[in-house]
Amino acid sequence: MEEVLYAVGDGIAVAKRNVIKIRRVPGILVSVLISPILMVLLFAYVFGSSIDIPGGTYREFLISGIFAMTVTFGATFTGAGLADDMQKGIIDRFRSLPMSRSAVVFGRTASDVVYNVASLAIMAATGLAVGWRIHDGIGPALAGFGLLLVFSYALSWVMAYVALLVPSVEVIGNVSFMVIFPLTFIANTFVPAANLPTPLRIFAEWNPVSAVTQAVRELFGNIPPGTPEPGVWPLQNAAIYTLAWAAIIIAVFAPLAVRRYTRVGVRK
Amino acid sequence: MTLTIEARGLTKRYGDVVALNGIDLAVEEGTVLGLLGPNGAGKTTVVSILTTLIEPDEGTATVAGVDVLTSPGDVRRRIGLSGQYAAVDEHLTGFENLDMIGRLYRMGRRRSRDRARDLLDRFSLADAADRPVRTYSGGMRRRLDLAGALVAEPQVLFLDEPTTGLDPRSRVGLWSAIEELVARGTTVLLTTQYMEEADHLADDIVVIDHGGQIARGTADDLKATVGGGRIEVTVPSEALAVDAARVLDTLSAGDVHIEGRSVTAPISGGADALGEALVALKEAEIDLQDVGFRRPTLDDVFLSLTGHTSDPTNDTTIEDRPARMVEGVR
Ligand SMILES: Nc1ncnc2c1ncn2[C@@H]1O[C@H](COP(=O)(O)OP(=O)(O)O)[C@@H](O)[C@H]1O
Ligand SMILES: [Mg+2]
Image (cartoon, rainbow over the protein chains, first blue to last red):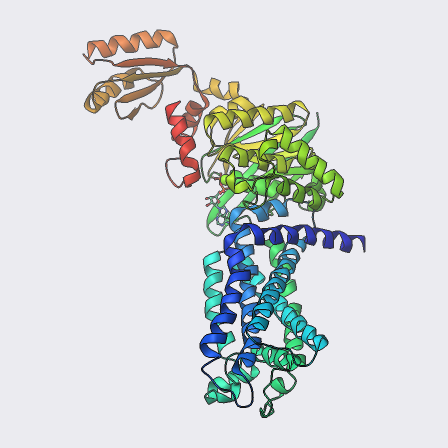
């Protein structure tokens, strides 16, 4: 028990360091705060005004997709941050300390939750400013934000593992582009999944990014009235499907990442 | 005598590369061991094993009486490590860096902060304490990194190339910081590529190359193995340098080296031999622009032991360059 408390303390010490950086590193500030604002504005005005969704405004439909996309890309921070630490030798310092073996990765993923909270808050504010509204009350809306955070937290563990396997910021950037990009676009994030050609539609219907987007749309009350019920189980039970994915990802990748961390050799 | 660090037969392979090939070490309490070798010799690998970052393929080691393989956690409580690359966070301030380490050593908030301030004072970083490390010079970063290794007042300190990349003033500053620690009774294992550094700081020196030990002893022991000293002459042209080398080769106790217009030859007979050499050069009608006689340095030891100098000639990082230039000037 005492060990667990210590481990949590260690995790907090590591997380604190990453959080301090939001203020100090312009690149992080831009990615966490500025580019999410731009995303909302861009999508809201460029697409939101040109595409019509029957019975509702496309802008409201879009916001959840942008939220999901942003937190999904947010997992890249975990990978890039860890890879950077490995390259700079800070990990060697951590590994020579009598601290909890899992704290570095836990601290990293925890600070990414803070990053995501900041991104979501600023996006929500921007969204509200451009006309997005929550229709079903604050409780479900908070649940929606919670679901986004859980989902991105799970993805953080995947990227943490990748970074410990291949500690290169460039590789992380490429992985993020090649995997996360299709994952966020072959989904219902920007267009209803039903509108996609068949193979893409099937992918989109089972894509967890679609599920989290769908679930959040429902919780925000942003599903335009008259939209047909989704035809597949993952989207009919979007919140459960999202949580199941998150649970499985964490169950698999958290132990893998921690184990990898304890074994990773000194950098070369 | 108490051995604070003891290692037997440390061996580590990376695929076909044999990073370490059976290294034995014994460091007495309160002394400094200098692990000396060129780039790629295996220094970092030794440090990594002793600080529990990696496990050896073969061999055993104890640090402060604790087995690094069976009780790595207990070893970590007793050691401080300042790695080859300063492990400080650029974007945190000096204070924040040390405070974080204190917290990771599970010091209370108060103690961790006090300790951080103390160390910053001691390493002349108090003025820069609240500035991001990004704004620090190389020497300041190194001092901060060393301070980081001292947060928990370790019994044993591992310093992997602590002055590589530093200008001469910062280097001397770091040396005195290390000497002060040793005076307080800390046992130190330090790696270096610089003979001068080992000569200055270490009680005992182990010279390694290609993962194997090639010599050990005190600085004086090692110098004695080389004998006399070196004569250095500078001639007006590179062509004449070749001629001068030919002349000196007949008198020299070892391999003669030419570098541009300078020729270096190890000799065994001290100042007498210098006179002989000058006569011989004069007879060969070679003009001399400069003549010098140098007592043996550890560089000479290295040259005679390995056939190459300790100065890394290739596969060095950019970080190494300023220091090497400094060495050249010296
Ligand atoms: N992780 C690694 N993977 C492959 N080779 C390695 C690794 N670490 C060290 N080596 C090799 O082991 C040898 C010794 O390396 P190292 O201990 O870093 O030398 P030094 O610190 O003396 O420069 C070198 O040839 C190096 O390339
Ligand atoms: Mg090294």
